[in-house]
Image (cartoon, rainbow, N blue to C red; front, side, top):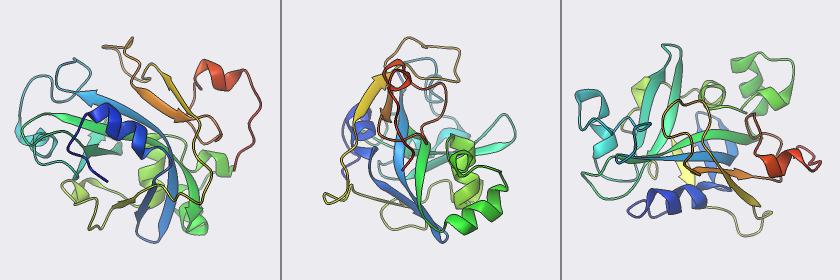
Length: 195
């Protein structure tokens, strides 16, 4: 995967890719892009010690703590020195599902990985992995398999933020019910089975 290009192009291409870590893996079904030019991005106020990875070379993991509870995983994009990253918001479990169940302890498998904090818990991704190389591991993102179903990408506004909420920088696979809620309008209008 080439991360040294527009964060929005990278985001779109990550939908359908496989995310792996520590004995578990899932198909990425929802992402959001963030760029230093807009106020919802951690990069908006410029480089800081905690955002050093975000401004570094592309293709590395930017992992940060959200609300003091969850570790959230981002893929750094664009050129070295530009603060841009793709937040991985949801995955559809593929491998290590029993391990995900042990880590998450939820009643429904649909709740295993349908949110950014849920998927990092299910995959065992913590803050210590900030700066990991997404090609070499231990967190790995593998390109879309051309022999699996192609994602049907729907674009909408990002969720869970209070700034720049009107930007259409959320990319979801409409064929998966593992996308976090609220679902984009087009997904709400038609029945889609979880796969």
